[in-house]
Image 1: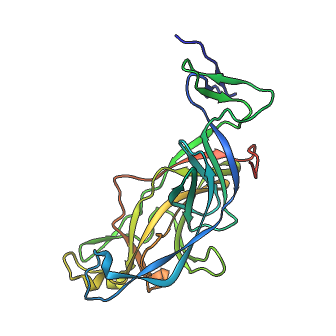
Image 2: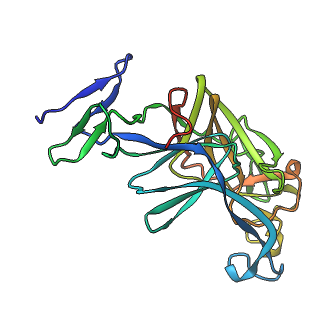
Length: 290
């Protein structure tokens, strides 16, 4: 057995093990505007909806917020306040993370493998190969809970298609604007209590959901024009005071749904998998940081 150091929390759970790579907080702050992504519109009801050439960029744009960091290795990003991860890009050594359904009021906490870049008195641990595994000068990642998104409620069936009023049981659906100049989103949220204080959440993947007007829902095998009044949604999670929210809203680069939120339903919700949120408590983390 190799030599090492294991540190435990008061409840007996493991905080860090120097034989394993430990994640540390490298940056925190507020998301900022990054880019506008235009939504898409169907060029013609006579064009097949499954081909990219059938769509054109519309005048409706989504303001995508995010942040940039350098030297990314194995990132985990937690957010407090609305937002759903919708990708990242890399230019040279700089990686930019993107979020839809977010605003400059959304906080982020970026964790990655600990680095040997901070100076000062502290404890630094290495594995047998010489790689840094722990640096006490950094705030270690401490997962306090892991929560799966609630299943959707019992569906109704229209023309053989399962329709859901909301994507999560117990969710509330509203028309929400994330910035004053932006479009309204059809947003469904459900709150999961965790404890006292402020929390942040991170999900490893988002599901794609369908949304359309209930009165125009086509039957299976119907011609494509009946599907023109539909759009894509995506889901994710974010932290808040006392717990976290699971949220679904209009997906990035979706078509525009020409209907109000009350007359729309969700369909094609993947029920063989549910987003799982990693939860951290932010009260003891520096903000903004680095």
